[in-house]
Each structure stands twice: as C-alpha cells, then as structure tokens.
Image (tube, rainbow, N blue to C red):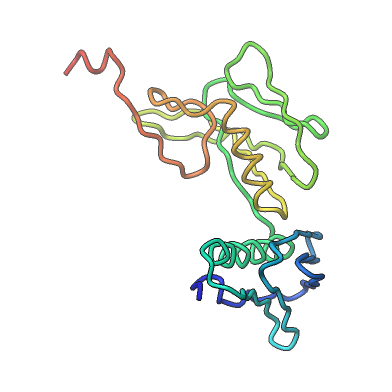
Length: 196
C-alpha cells in the first residue's frame, strides 16, 4: 500500500464533497473546485467519519504513483476551499514597485517600461505594500510585498512563478523578484574580489 495514498483525507468543517465516478467536487466557504482523476482509482466519501478515501485495485507501478498523487490533490482541494493558499513575493530594488490596475498588475522592475501582467480568474492579488526595507548584506534596500492568494494551489503557484520569472533575483546586488524567505546565493563582484 502507498503510505500517502492509504491515509484518509479529513474533510474540514463547512466543506461538502461529492464524488461522481472519478470526478470530485468540493464546495466550501471560499469557493468551489472540481477535478477529474484517473478511473483506475476508487474515491469514496465517508460521511460518518468525515473523511475521503482513495483506493486502488492493482499493484502496477503507475497506479501506485497515482494513488498518492490523487490523495494529495484531493487534500489540496479541501484545504483550498476552506482556507485557501497564499504566496508572498518581494520586489526588491531601488525604484522597483507595483500597483493594481483593475484586473492587471503593473510592475516597475528596472525596465524602460512598466510590465503589465493580467491576473487570472480565481486569483486575488492584494494591493502591493510599499515602504518596507529589506536588509541585504551591509545595507538595506526598498522592498514591495505582493500577496497572491486563491483556492487552487496549482494556479497560485504557477502565477507566482510567472511573476518571479519576469525579473529573477540577481546574485550581485540581489535585486529582482523573490519569494518571501528565499535565500539568494550571493557572488562577490570584481571590485570586491580584487581587494582580497
């Protein structure tokens, strides 16, 4: 048995789960999610114990892999409709910033023009928080915080990664877009290396 797949998924309070064949629907206080899974797996809701169980019929390698994956995806759906998921990005650099313009995020990230990114449906971006300072090395640099949230973990992560890809942090001054708490491996510049 799969150690992950055999664990039942607890259903949080206020969340309703329905299974129609291999299609799972979850409704909760934050919204509604629906996803189809591989028909080789059986998904059952135990209303008495308030859990969702995933079972498999055979011991094939791919079915075993899908067993644990399906259990985790269902767990993410239930957490998404009850609590939601959030990713926090930091835009670090002098003159860097961002603002919301309707359903678009407008970023100033060191290019000659502002970069406009459309916010996908189901994703919420909080208005960028400015004014905080991030200590990098011996000095501090202005930092703008972006909070991306939504019910679908995959969508939230993908949108955050696509924003980070616009200006990844560079290793010399650590300017760019990074995840909150991300460690940036720094390099010594030529001038610093020449002094040693």
